[in-house]
Amino acid sequence: MPYMTAAEEPNTAHPRFAEAVRKLGLADDLLPRIRRFPEATRTAAEAAAALDCELSEICKSLIFAADGVPVLVLMDGSSRVDLELVRHALGAEKVTRAKADIVRETTGYAIGGVPPFGHRSKTRVLADRSLLDHDIVWAAAGTPYSVFPMAPKTLIDHAGGTLVDVREQIE
Image 1 (cartoon, rainbow, N blue to C red):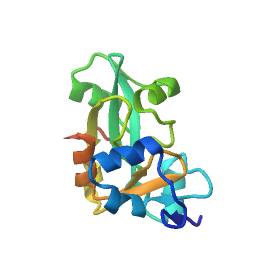
Image 2: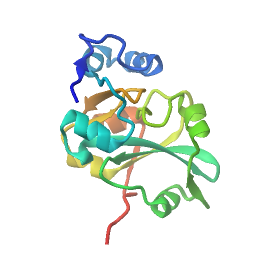
Image 3: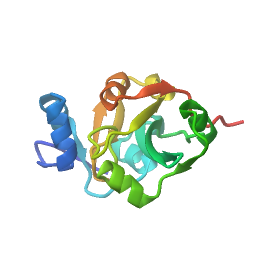
Image 4: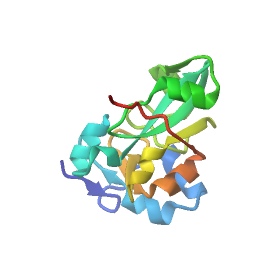
């Protein structure tokens, strides 16, 4: 799927995300590198296919509820989150996937476009260590149509993430 650069297609990022990028002092570097797709890429697999990159180079931003409190988990696109490992990492009694309305209320974005930072509400962030296996990962820029590249360590730092091992182990 072809994509357009920010210069070719202005306003490719969600306005809230673009504002967060400006506040972080990243606008000049990051905003021109955002890629916009003509069709939505709501899944990591769709984004990887559109970018012609490895599935694991996609950074998924997933919202869970830990004892009813939203938490963001950053995970590589080829892996699944192990809820028991998240529960243990947070010291929570119960962890569940957040419903779509909670995702939107917490982040200000719809599922499929949630970026790793620039959310409406401050949440705790866990970042799976597997993201560090790559020099660059691609994450949503606030819409299912836009993504941006960033070094994983930098992305995790801007998200305020804590490195953890919460990837489901395949036997």
